[in-house]
Length: 484
Image 1: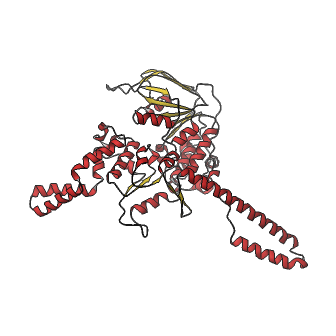
Image 2: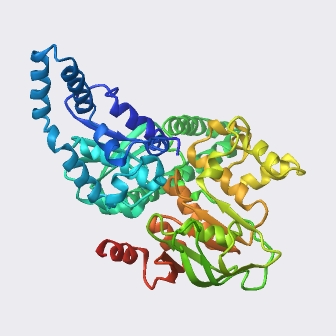
């Protein structure tokens, strides 16, 4: 996080890199692409068609020219160009792409603003694919969705992603950006990770050998510094030591050394949340979302909630949290239970002008700044980072502030909605370790297959008015969905 991946893609998309080939046709789907569609009244289909700016402008000009009917020569040129770009087949092509991205027909003709974040990201991707670029740039597209479609993408794709499964299935090459340098590796992420591990091992060996040599030299110098007979030898060692230090191997940094620590709550009896014969619907003639649902959650639970968009995952969580009341049955929570939730909204609602410490002081008044500094240190936000304005933190660092807020009250259950968004792979690994060691219950909604598989011992599928336990892995669930 913060290495400059997003900036690099932006420079590429604007042809602002020296000697970058100008003839390459590019489309860039940014992290913000989904949020930009949240206020768009036009239909999903119209948004995709509008991605072709030339066609949109030509059609507007054609309409204006036909109304005025005073420039037949220009009308002819506009018609000619529209034929060249195959304008008449545009809607058919756009619908084919949307179908390939699993859009139901009813959604295609509905307003873009009514879509969830995941479907808005798919809409932005559909617009980019509609333009059939030579090079497609995607910045964290898997934050919101699974993109099986891209596994067979026939042209060049450069993607910034933290999703191991996606990277291993889709990519053929890996570019690593660190310390303002790019290094290139043939092979997918797993291959890259294996190479990095071997490189780190060799660097550590070289560093340890160097340190041993330096230590022996320094020991000799210190021992015989005042011995006149040994003066030439001491001087020789001093020069040799100076030469080594000029070209010294730096101590290698292991990015996996980063740790997070969720403090333990006091134990509670089981179950701490019990859902019994629950039915729920929003009324107004709409059908029930749930009928006769039963389950329990305790402090050892590790649950992944799966389901297609709109199946009711968010509603189920709100019933568990007591934000909604069932229309039938009951949701019983231990009166002493503390439940904390993590969503991107919680991260986005932090005051960007305040530091992490100041944000926590505002959320949890009555505590000393040092208490918050100590707690933030559990999430590798110590020292300068804890006292930096939140706007100056990377997306991943802001998420870590969110995890610090999440755990401050020592919750018995944490509910995490897409927690890996904006996290780099090392931070995801640290979060996995923290949740594995956490002494409370964990409920996760996530598209990240590796993350879910690494933590969850139960997978619950929401759909058809039921919550059923899935007997299999997340990969098997995805395959079952695609085969339906």
